[in-house]
Image (cartoon, rainbow, N blue to C red; front, side, top):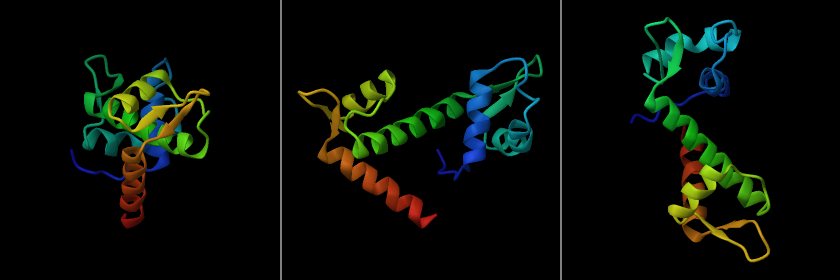
Amino acid sequence: MKNEKLTTDEYDALELVRRGGKQDLATACVGRNTKRLCGIKLMSFGRDKRLTLTEKGEEVLFLRRCVLGLRALAADPMAAVDDDVLRFLGRKSHILPLEAGGHALSERGRESLADIDQQEERR
């Protein structure tokens, strides 16, 4: 998977399409970003002419939620993070449960977060 740099607006458009609803195309955010996001195969038009996320698009959104979860836990071990993100980060040994509740970043999690931040600075 190419490392496509997405803007916050493009992430918002993906999230709006993921949530679905009657007004997928009615929002300006989705309309502005449809061509590029379809071009890099993060979303596509179905037979019923509705926008849907591709598997790659769902993966991109999930990975973004994981990065945001790591950052939130680095700032506050008691931060609210979705259960599926916690399971994934725990399975990958990026976080460790604390006895008092919450989660702390493991050494591997801190290294991953530092690597992500370094890559974002280069772009």
